[in-house]
Length: 81
Image (tube, rainbow, N blue to C red; front, top):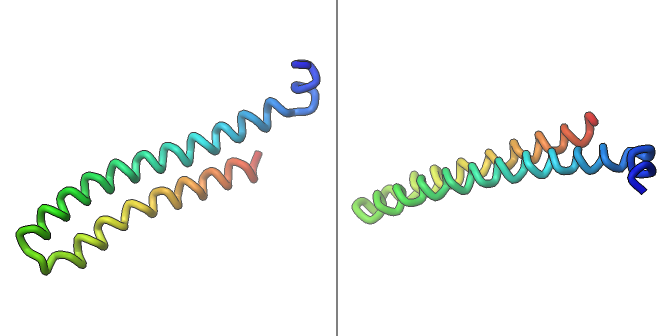
C-alpha cells in the first residue's frame, strides 16, 4: 500500500497540498491578527472623532490583501510542483 503511494507520487501530491494549505493558513492568521489590532484602534479613534470612519474602514480592509498574497503563493506552489 505504501509502496503504491510512493510509486504513483501520491505522497508528493499530498505534501504539495499541505504546503499550499500552510501558505494560506499562515496568511489568513496574520491578516486576522493585523485586522484585529487595526480594528480595535480604528473603533477607539472613531469613538472620539466620528469623521475618522472612512480612514478607519480603509485601514481595516488593507490587511485582507495579505490573504490574496497567500492564495497567490499557494497557487504557485501547486503549479510549479
